[in-house]
Length: 221
Length: 208
Image (cartoon, rainbow over all chains, first blue to last red; front, top):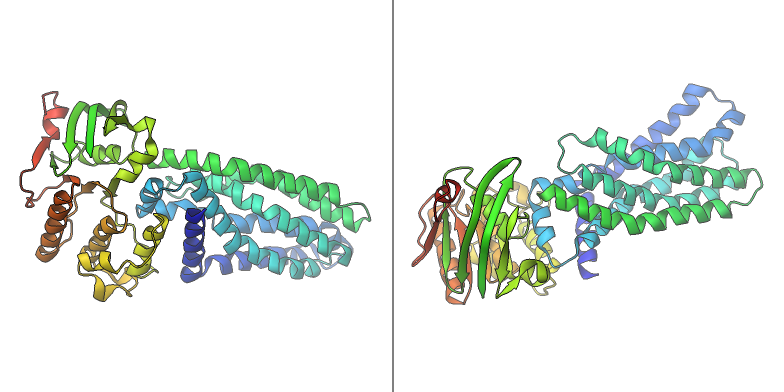
């Protein structure tokens, strides 16, 4: 547990000092969402209909941006060798790095998401559920992304491959999250969707550390 | 401490690097690895560190196979590879402090810094360091996470004469305290009473 927090604190600190990563993801998120009103036109009915899907799709893409460096930076400077030799299970280190990614990338996205949703004319009934769906769903993005990042750590310019690996895994998150928001806007219960979303996050929190640790072992060979 | 490798074979890609390599290392001993580029010095050190799986053969620490007790084996070795694992935006002290805390230790890293004359540089971000200074920080890790078996891969790269002397002193003191070292190096450093493992001979099929 101690090792988990040591790695978490170090990675969050590094992201903060290096700057950029979180800001870049948020800027990308904002730009992608604002493209839709420009491309589709200002009819509030259409925008409101697609708002949940647009915000969530843009959030998926923004979360991908900083994934590729999750393990690659440590592999390139030899830190990963030493992390593998430390008296901390590799699964705990993978989990800590996913948590650091969530804090530095996903959390800022959650903060700006309601503003972008309002921009997209999302009815106010949907905003609370959108926030809930992001809080429940984005940890799965970081966790599943961690598997992809571990698998592509040893590949130069593996960013595109990483996106191709990870985006299909994000589909359940997208479906349940948008389903929850649309249900609440349509006056239906959002709860079943949110529960399924939480289930996806829980399952990935079990799978990601194990799969990520196995992939890291291969990357070090 | 008694460390032994038994019939270790290393295959990288499709190439046989070395086969059926056996050696033993007891407390206070030093083993110097010699061989041309690509003869498997780094691979052997990575195998000894547990980072690389040998194609066959076993590693034994105090009569216990590595696979039987990987945790004890892991705690017994300290590895300094040819990469210096420093984060450019963190200061030297912060870089070392991370490894210090990851190994569950408390206190400060001042003593480790002093070993390689880094006290004055402690607050400087690693991005401003020269290659030799980076290597000294890497070597200072040996005192941050002490282990009985040191595995050093070309530890003198980039070091000046004074720092090489500090390294030689550190190794002598470590061996005096019951530790052992395995060193791969191209330049001659002062290792009294060391044994040499010539990897060229092993690769060619001869006896070590």
